Each structure stands twice: as structure tokens, then as C-alpha cells.
Length: 393
Image 1 (cartoon, rainbow, N blue to C red):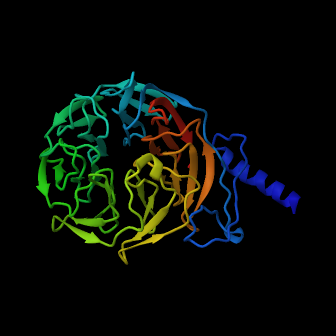
Image 2: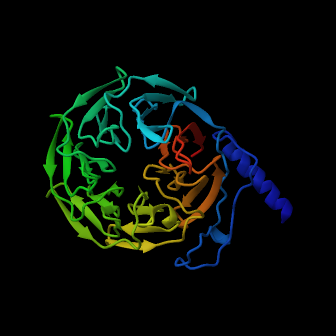
Image 3: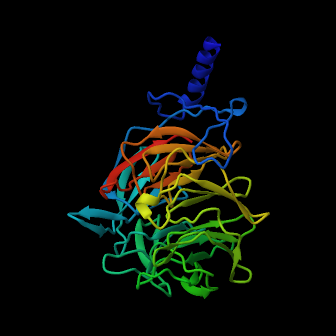
């Protein structure tokens, strides 16, 4: 049996070698005999276990340290990385710089700067290949401005402004090519009840229905039926929400759905291949001391949330740090140094590699070649990094 396991391990390694950068840590496979209500994490049962190769690359270097930035896959396969903040003494300084990652050379090249510095903004790839940059903190206030990045010129130009100042909002590309901007903190540091739509044809923002709850640091996920699921977030005054609601473009309304299993904000959500939504991590009102390793799944057909096995590590401040892989699994690589893979078939979390530190507000971007680019973030001392990594998909 030991010899069989040995040759099986060699076969798995060879199969992944062409697309991965292996390191010396062993493959992690565990067996569990726990119920889904357990507060501890688990791995697949013995009869359905899968092996995951730890294929985290050595660290790459961006041109600048950044956290709370955006990283957007462009039509040509390159990645636009924009904004975020850097550390200056004890201050967090929003930045306007942008750079391009080229997966053909694994290199970062500066491109034109944004028209104003931003962190906590959003970036959305439009059908015409341009990238819509919206809101965020511009070092003096929360911004209502928006700009478009054109990959053909490498430049940013202002487009129409939002109707409200926002940071920590969500931006969702709808099936009609408009972009839903929902929630976020206002100029008065209170979560917005309002939502608006960006029309790429007229390059203007127009109002749409109000949320049932003001939300900031929530998630918004486009469902297969075209509706948008908003989950959790902060409603201000230290209150964290478990409530969820659905935006319907046809009626321009937000309708409440069932509550999530757990109150959470600064979490992440990913649409799975079966149409369900995986919600992971986050925190309660205690923020750093209230981090979660819990996870749950929203089923749009039944409009219900179901608690599943926990992640292996507690993590929060990871809104853009989880991506769907081509095989239907999910790579989670933020809010903690430990990388994990969600096995969608068995609904368990498998340990992957480790970064050199815990990183918060880092961004994961799935590349056209199947690999995942991990960029930036800040460590527990609020020090942003210029490091980036590749993980095989």
C-alpha cells in the first residue's frame, strides 16, 4: 500500500508539473468524520478525497506597494492593477498609480496614472474592453467621481460622476451591460441606502431602487437569472448584518430574501458553477477579534442559506481574494497567509501553500491560462506589500 501511494503521488505531481511551480511542502489530504455544524474545518472523506498540489510561485514584485487596490483581467489577457494605498509614517496614503501585469513575461509595467488617488474603489471590465473605476477614498474625502481606462491608449479619463460619494460599495456588471453600484460608506461615514446604474452608452449614472438596509463592506453577486444577491455588511453604529436582498433589474427594486446563517462583513462571495453562491469569512462587530472561518451557501432556487464545513483558517478583509477555478473549485488567498481550495463537489476546504505573511485587502485575479495572480495587501502591522504571486489553477 505504501508503494502504491508513492507511485500515485508521483503521477499526480507529473500531471500538474507543466502548469505549476512546485514547492517542497507535501500534498495535504485529510479525512473527517464531522457534521457540517462543526466549528472546525474538514477535508474530504476518504472515499472521495482529492489531492491538491501546492504550486505557489516565488514572490514577484510590483512597481509599488499597495493594498485595497483593484486588479482587472483585460481582454488581451493582461491585468490592470490600479490605486490602493501606501504607508507613509503612520498614515495611509491613497495612490493614483496603475500598472499592467503581463503573464507572458510575469512582469509589471507602469501605465498611465488615474486622475485622482483612490483606495476602496471598484473596477469593472465593460463589454467594450474599457475598465470603469468608481469612487473610493481620494485622500481628502470619499469620491463620487468615476473614470475609464482604455487599454488601447493606456490612459484614464473621467466619465460621468455618481450621484453620491461612496467607498466600500459594490459594482456588478449586469446582463444589459450596465453596472449596478450599491451601498458603501457616504461622505458622513454612514452606509448608503441608495443605488445607481452606470450606462456605458451615455456614460452617465442614473438612480435605481433603494436597498432595504444601508450596507458597506458587503458582497454583491450576479446570479444566473440576472438578479444580484447582496449579503451582510455594516449598517453603521457598530451593527453588522445577516440580512440579504436581491436586486431585480427589470423592476429596479431590492427585495429581501432569507437571512444568512451568520452576521458578517468584510467577507467574500463567489458564484459557483451550479448557480449557488459560496460566502466565506468576514467578521462581526468586533472586527479584528471577531474574524470567522465559517462558510455558507446560498441556494437561489430555495432562497435559503446553509452552513457548511468551516475553512481551515479565520480570515476577513478579503472581498476580492477568492476566485472560481476552471474545475469548479474556489481558490481563497487573502485575509490569512494560508491558501485554501474549496472542493465544490465535497464542500470541504483543502489546505494549499502559504504566503510569507497574513495579507488583508489583497486581490486575486484568474488569468486566461488558468493560473491565479495574487497581488498586494497589507500585513498585520498595516504595511502594504509590493509582492505578488502566481498559483496554478
